[in-house]
Length: 247
Image 1 (cartoon, rainbow, N blue to C red):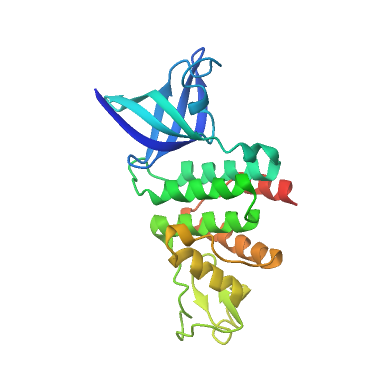
Image 2 (tube, one colour; image 1 turned 90 degrees about the vertical axis):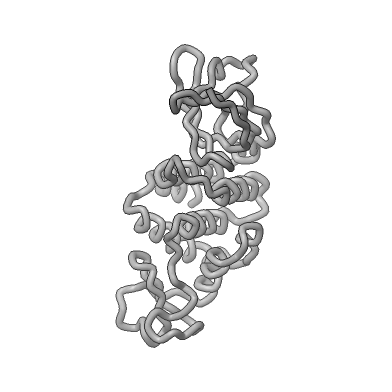
């Protein structure tokens, strides 16, 4: 039996037995872990708070024959602010859906955890626009997973900037105003392309450091949402719920 410690965030729970939970934890050092939390449904159980959705904890796991159990969970953050607004809560649940559907269990890149933590932090404290948080999560998630679109210049002529450009959400192709006129790709203001470049190429702690007005943020996140869906070849059911709650 192996025993180890790592920090992580709970992104899904399901009931098993009379009082136990199955908990999916996105960890820093072991990727995604599916673990049993014995008795965690009990209000007085030591694992109750640490096995709740969005709980960020220092976990102690035991593993035997590829079956994991949580033996300890020291809570570091609960993100209470997510419960104050249905749009925030739905967006946070959407992030969990994306991670569960796209992240291989063996993937150990800690940037997935850092992206999720920063996204929930800004959602919870309300210091960033919801559409900005959504766009950053979607495009950075694609980039970290190996699907970064080549947005550094026009794919045809190499032009770095024109007032408007064209971005193909299926292929990730970027075209300048001259090369894209006859394409099927939607026309995009350059400010949106600049934001996409920032999201893809910035260091993890700077990825949210840009500003756009709400109209441009809406344009940005409609692109990143469609691009993410095409990267992983599947829809995410909570996108419709988020737009209904946001609008």
